[in-house]
Image 1 (tube, rainbow, N blue to C red):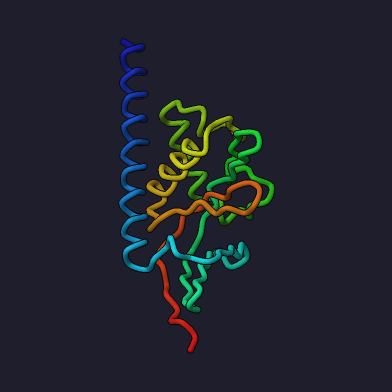
Image 2: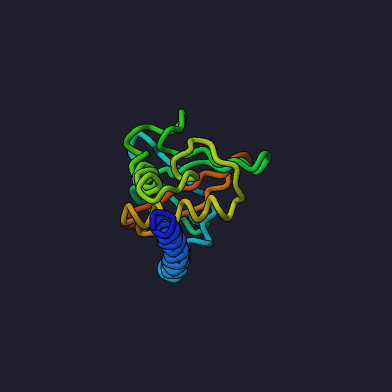
Length: 163
């Protein structure tokens, strides 16, 4: 019976991950339709303010509270979780910490191991789970020329383009 329970838990966890990825895809489509997330010319995170800003070529800006889920290094295929990332301020680790607690509850070591060998798509799935657990409005893969920063964000505030 114990093995059956563990298998059931693993199946439940995998279903939760798949539902989280699907939900995040829907959020991304909605954000793109409402304020054109995919057209952002640049992004920046102010960790002291706990805010991400997306800037657009027409001068429009979109701002939101941010959480840093982790960073993915494409050079070596590893994801460093935000819950124990030396570059992430503690207030911005909350959604990542929720994912760690979920991983502990569901025996998912990739959520409880500080540095995980994975693909970029698996890092996106980690982000989807963290965003869902944290009640985020969306998530973003912030490309930086090196490691990719995976973030979740809250309610967006739009600033009109400057005349």
